[in-house]
Structure formats: structure tokens, C-alpha cells
Image 1 (cartoon, rainbow, N blue to C red):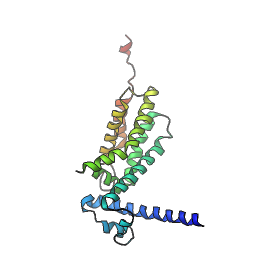
Image 2 (image 1 turned 60 degrees about the horizontal axis):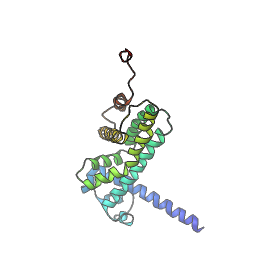
Image 3 (image 1 turned 90 degrees about the vertical axis):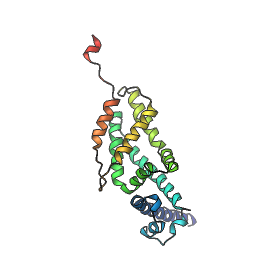
Image 4 (image 1 turned 60 degrees about the vertical axis):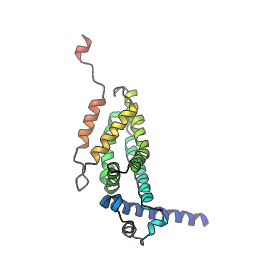
Length: 208
């Protein structure tokens, strides 16, 4: 019985935090970090004013927790779709497609991330870079290295290239219309990336 009550308390805690994160994402995306109203986040989540302080000591702590949670969800969303594909070229295609799908399905949280990346707070930018390291590493190890090992990608510095590919992704995915649709077609981005990465077939002149 004690164990059941503990599980129930943990479930309630998780549900409460999820509602607070959803409301926080909407408020941070709408107003920006500086102007976001902490009491509005609590009330929009369906709780009394000040409820957030029962779970997070400050507005900044809430933002950092939101970024951490969103980064994990972002990573899992992409990896779950990319990891089941054996062909590294198809993995690259799915990486961008899944990435854009995540943004469109989690628009408020994605806008918080993009606004933070493009904002003036250097510490927050560094934090985002840190929490997104697993995704950088996944691109390097499970897409680029795989393609090089299979002989379909050119030899590249995978760490530098992963950084470039992530920069392309985050930069293009941040260009959204009011409905969350990207201005750029993910397929065009994939074509551009693959054209630069894929090994070029030897021409007839190479054998003369």
C-alpha cells in the first residue's frame, strides 16, 4: 500500500510538472524570458499563483528545467525515428524530417529554444549547447560515421560536420510562419546536405 501511494504521488508530481512546463513554454514563447509572468504560468496551468515555487526556486530554474526536458524529448523524438533506418543517407533524410516534425508538434517549446539561442544570455546559450550534446554526438556517430564506414559519405571530421549539420537544422527549423510551418522545405535542405556529403562517382575521365 505504501509503495502504491508513493507511485501515485510520483505520478501526480510528474503530471503537475508537465502542465507547468506546457504553460511555461507558452508564456516564455509569447513574452520572452524577461517579460514572462510567473503567476500567469501557474494560473494558465490550472494552479494557484505561486504554485511554481513549490517545484522550482525561481523563474530561471523553471526555464532551465524546461530546456532540459525539451532537449531530452527532442533527442528521443529524432533518435526513435532515425535509429531504426539502416541506410545512412535515409538516416540523414529522417533526421531533418523528424527534426522539423518535432518543431511543428512542439511549437512553443521549440520557440523558447530558438529565442534562447538567438538571445543575449550567453550562459543560457551555453546550457543549450551542453544539453544538446547527445544529439550532436548521435549525428556524428550514428549518421556520419556510419556513412563513412559504408563508403557512401566522404571522409570528414565528423565532430565539425555534426556541428555544421546541427547549425543548419536549428537555423532553418527556426524560420517558421505563424502556424509553425517552416519557410524552407526540409527536402531541399536534405538534398543540399547529401550533395555535399555523398561520395562522387568516378567519371570516365578518371580512368583515362
